Length: 237
Image (cartoon, rainbow, N blue to C red; front, side, top):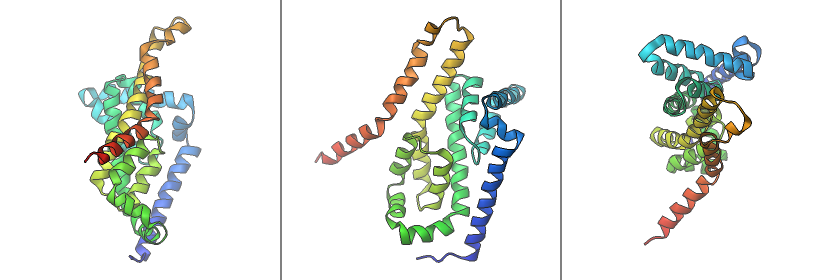
């Protein structure tokens, strides 16, 4: 079993200071208001839209860059909304998924650098089954947690603290995020299109708005369905 060193504890302290700075930014500054309130989120969307339009052909790349860095320590939802509003439900889904995956990868490596040393000793002594599961079946663990809408930032750093292989984490993240990102982006993008021509409540009963709602309901049964399919294959000689 690996012993924790002074350097491991210094890394943990540095990480906690980073988290404290993010909490302060989110709760006690004007920048944080753009994530806490509806008016702030609309302001964030407007600012990102201005930057994207000013960047011209590089707008999508700039948006992905800002999004991926932002979700390292800030909520992803306002950025996802911005992607849907700025780029629409289809292109927005692609850019949101790319940014989420990139941001999750950055957070994973930060978690591995700052937390792995301290967490490894704890996992080996208190929860060896969890660390072993992450190392042996990391893709399934990450995929199912993403499908179940597990808190994005928490999972990113927690995965980095375990022995999970990065390729399993990356693949599980990309495939696991695909349904929720598609559903959320499609719904927001469709809502934007409907509101642009809204005249009466019946206008809300469109395929574009009902489709993501049905997909959302189906997504809660998806992990169980996949699990049954995998068990069925295991039973085949």
